[in-house]
Every structure is written in structure tokens, then in C-alpha cells.
Amino acid sequence: MTEAGKSDNWATLSPAEKKLELFRRQKELLDTFLATGAISQSQHDKSLNCLIEKMGIGEENR
Image (cartoon, rainbow, N blue to C red; front, side, top):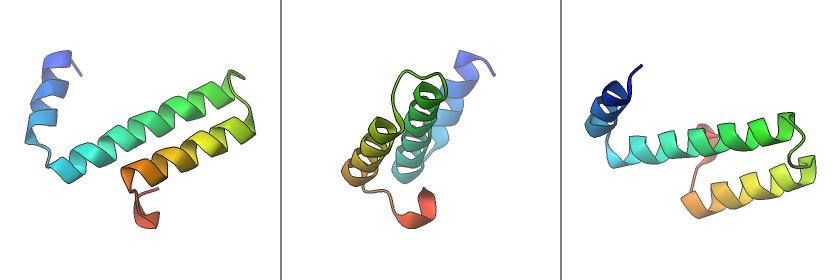
């Protein structure tokens, strides 16, 4: 998808959908860091828990 396409899709999302998409992207980045050895499992878990808490992500969206 092009950057323009991403921007168009982003504009159609509700604030709640944007929040979930941002969470998904951040979690994906943490998972990549873990997979490449850039961070430890404990750092991944700590960062993920902080992200969940600060963004107010419920169990159903994790």
C-alpha cells in the first residue's frame, strides 16, 4: 500500500480504531526487537505491560 493509501485509510478510522492501530504497531515493533535480540524477554514484557497500561488497552484487544 502506498503512503497516500495509508493516509486515506487513517483518515477514515475512528479515534478508538486509531488507538488500537497504534497499539498494534507498537506491539509489532516490540516483537521485532525481541525476535532480533535487541531486547530481552523481560524488557519486552515490561514494555508491553507499560504500553497496555498507558494506552488503556483491554484484554479483548491484546
